[in-house]
Image (cartoon, rainbow over all chains, first blue to last red; front, side, top):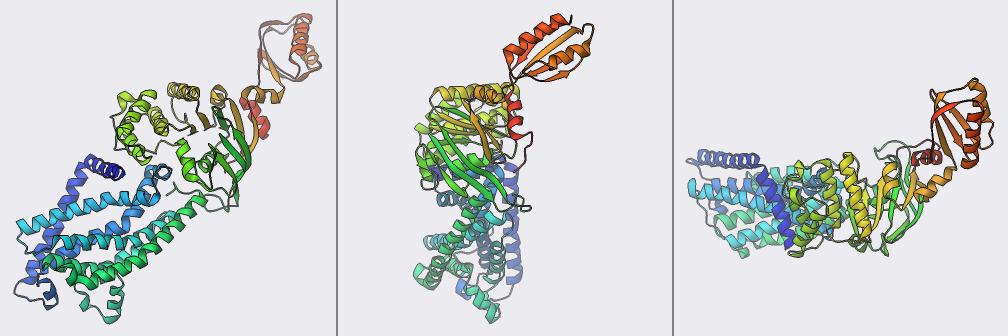
Length: 267
Length: 321
């Protein structure tokens, strides 16, 4: 736990040292949330959304959850490769690898700060949209947090693949691009998956965010329990069982390739 | 303490991805004893850092192996890493926004140290390296010398028996370099085995028990600084001439005819005699000075420098790997 603490402390101290950037990021997030609030108000005026019925028909909640969840997609996809790239640029990667701490722990601890930061900013957004802007929610907090954590772990398989590839290519990997783009377009972040043509809906089923978003919206908007989102939980578990081992294999391959090439510290 | 056997690191092509295959470390065999300060000396690109990184388990060798503190780098990398403290060549190996103390806390925790031992070790190494007063400044405010010292402090956190110091005085001012050399001597006095790399011949000569000269990945000589000097069997005699006498060409010719004189270089007002038999040649030179009426202000003898030896051994050519 102490190792996790020093990683979080490092992130916190660094963040505080860039105060202006921190404040501007937070302001940007508020502005983004406000945009979706007013957009939902504009679109929802006098309209019904049958496809949103499973989520209580709440367009604003639908959009806010879709947007904020995409930041967790970003955390899962980019934390590992971002940590490696950041350490390479700081010249610290070799020291981390030479330490007593196994590589997989280093990656998890590095991602921990990003995850906490995303949780913090998401919490702030929800506090504002619920208590200031008056958005209706009916949340099952325990179930929502479980789904969120499971989703992050599930998507981390793709993050590991991305990190393994970035260790070899140094910049640019097709995993992040493909997963990020497809998730944004097909997983139902901004509109229901049911609107997609059938062949794209098949692709959407293979994406963890599709299941995560359905389950999160139900647990946050209509207080669904885990039993009610059982099929999404099972889908996320199945995808985790598939992608996490592949991610570990690809990452190990990239790491050993960089070690053989002598290019661990290069970026 | 460190045993290297037939170690080779070959890259299929140059590190920039172009060019022909490169052998960065070529069949190196070496044993470094406990408590010894061993310096790998060589030009940039000679393979020094690659060799140190192989010993640190950061790079996998193509063939051969090595043991550090009795542990094999290929089969027991975790134990090897627990035995060594590594200080890197560059200045960018810390978090710039964190203070020196916060950096040490971070890296110490990753090494498995926990409070209160961690904080005790941080205070000890900061004090040892003379950084206690600067410990709570952000790393980005540190001078080059302080950054190097913090690198050594980090390497010492776990009190390892073996230290690998890559270019510990590169790009620091002379005063800081002197301080760092003093610290290295103190670390040797504590019984640690130290392998350091440098391309600074003077530094290698000052602090090393033995020196290995690395060129194009090959270890071309290993010996004490004094014995390496003996490789040349040459000595220089420098004469500061006030008056060349009546017939300077005849005097120079007589010098060149002395048995044991390899060469005579004329300057004005100096003269340099390269000799292979120091005592005999010196007395002959003195005799000829008197005989030809030459007046000299001073006569000095110079041992060959490490640079002379290095250039002799490498044939005056070096290359980048």
